[in-house]
Each structure stands twice: as C-alpha cells, then as structure tokens.
Length: 447
Image 1 (cartoon, rainbow, N blue to C red):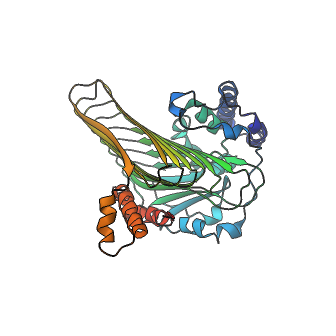
Image 2: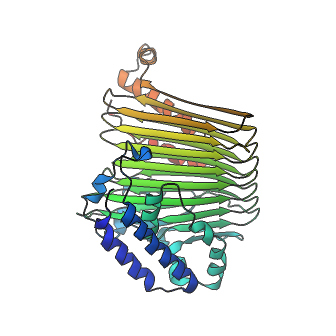
Image 3: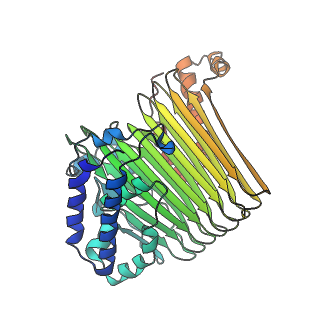
C-alpha cells in the first residue's frame, strides 16, 4: 500500500479547526466521519498499480513529498495572472476558492427564490436557522460514498471546504453557476486541498454548472487537488455540467463525480483536461429511474511527460434509459493517457440505448495510450455498443492542406483542433462551450 503518514499534520490541523466550531449534531457527525475515514485510510493506504483500476497510474510519488499548509493567498496573483483571469471570463454566478479558502470578495452568489448556493465553510462557521434547514435537505447526499474507497476516505478526512447547491422544484437560474478552485502562490513544500461538494436538483429543476480547477505559480514539490462532487437529480431535473482541469505543470489532480439520476432526468457532462503533471478523472453515473438520459464526454490534451487517466462508469438500472459517451485525446511528446470506460446494463433495464467511443490522435511516436472500453449486459432487449481507435495523423489529410499552401505545422494544428472540437460541440450550453474553447486554444503543440 502507499502510506499517507506524510499527511498526518494536515489531518490533525483540520481536526482541531473543526473541533473549535462545535455545531451540535451536525458537527459531531462531520467530526466522526473525518476520524473514521482517516482510520480506514491508515489501514488501506492509497491505491497501488497492483489494483486493476490503477494499473497504469502510480500515486507513489505523493508519499515521498513533504506536505505543509497551503501558501498564503496572494490577491495580486489572482487578479493579474492571465490563466486565472481567463477563469473569470465566463458570465456567470460564481463561487471562488483559492488554496482551499473561500473568497467571498471574488464570488458572486445568486439571490433567487428556491436556489441555495453556499460555501461549506460558511455553513460550519455561521449556521443560521435558514442554512440549517437548507443543509438538512442535502446532508445525506454529502455523505454518499464514491466508487474509489481510499480516495474517498482521503477526501473525507482532509476536506475543509467545498460547496453545496440546492435547486428547489421547478426552479432554475438565468445564467450558469461557475465554481473556481484556484491554486496560486509560491511554496517550497507540497500542499493539498480536498473540496467536497454537493449538487441537488429537485423535481423539474434546471442548472448549468461549470467547475474549473486552475493552477498557477511556483509550487516547488507541487500540490495535490482531490476534488469530490456528488450530484442528485430528481425526476425531470436537467443538469449541464462542465469540468476544466488546467493545473500548474507540477500539480496533481484527482477528481471524482458521482451522479444519481431519477426518472426522466437529463445529465450532460463535459470534461476537459489540459494542465497538470498527473490527472485522474473518475465519473460514475447511476441511472436509477426509467427514461433518464446521460451524455458523458471528455477531451484530454497531453504533452511533455504528462499523465492523464479517465475512468467512466455508467450503470443502467431501469428501463428505457439512454447514454452516450465520447472521449477523445490528443497526445504529444512522451505523454501518456489512459481511458477505461464501463457500461453496465442490469437485467431490469430493458430497452436501454447505450454507446461509448474512445478515439486518440498520437502526434508523437513516443506518446502512449491505454484504452479499455467495457460493456456488461444482463438485459436482452437493448442497443449497446462500444469501441476504441488510436493512431497517428492521416498523412493524406496533411497533404491536402499542403496542396493548398498550408504548412505541415499549421495543417497539424488545424487537424488536431478539429479533432478536439468534435467533443466540445457536443456541449449544448453555448456559453460554457465558448469558455472551454478559450483554454483549449491556448495549447501550444510545438509541432
């Protein structure tokens, strides 16, 4: 196992902070959860490459780092760094966390009847009667476990902040809600942040949600973001969710999204992974109600020695469900990517329609992709397919551009961009799509 003893001081400091607040039954439950999670983690450690789902992704470097509290927030960096400023370009309501701390001055929360949006630290430190009543409606969702137990325990034991969103029956916002997790400043030691968040959409409600994890600055040994988001969609609820990962070059990122879907609900998820030394994205969708529809798409662009690992799992438990997955990667230099996508169709889930496709464009002979689509079907009246294809640029396409006085370098960039846009244009939320494209277009392929 991979030890987490180097995180002892971080855990103990967080525990002391929580103990100082109290907060009755709620505080006691949270305190117990953190202690139990830490105890299990000490026994299990982090997952190793001996575990099938982590076969290609090695976390052992984390146990060798010296972790310290996150560096102090430098507001001038947040307000001047080009990449971080790009994160503020989306016209949206906004929650901002920097180095694990909620920043009210940079946030812009909606004031709309039936919509509750709150940073978790605000709940802990200043619960009033309205907050208590609203949080009770999402509290059980907060404690739902995700598939990767040890990473869930790491998040639960170290989390100090995050957000919770509740959209009441038949309510919606007039523009997107954008959550930014920013890592900025300088530190000679490694540090970590573990936001744990909840999104609950009640019957007939709608939301467009964007979550951005952006890193900038000189971080020495790097940092580790461990971001967990649990989503509950009621009957006929609709959520369009986008996630951007553009960490600093020495940043490590683990993200887990778990979405439970009830009858006739709709979930559209778009994941874009750009910057970071090591990125692992897990998304688990459970279709628990008849007629629900899930579209789960992802784009990953890697270069240098980057490592990006995407794991998806969609489970159809009820009839007449539909799911679509498209994940595409562009790999350059000696980078490596992993895709493992699983579709499970239970015996009760008759008349399910499900498809999954993973495609990869290799710009370098040294780049490596490990792709493993999986399909497990227990029902007999279904439409289901999955596939994977990877390879280098088609020379005939490059020649076509050359014949029109376009250089090979420019042709490569144009072909790569077109390949990527196929994923992004499946994002039906136009403002969110334009926001993601801004970041994708900053990639310099050095071809």
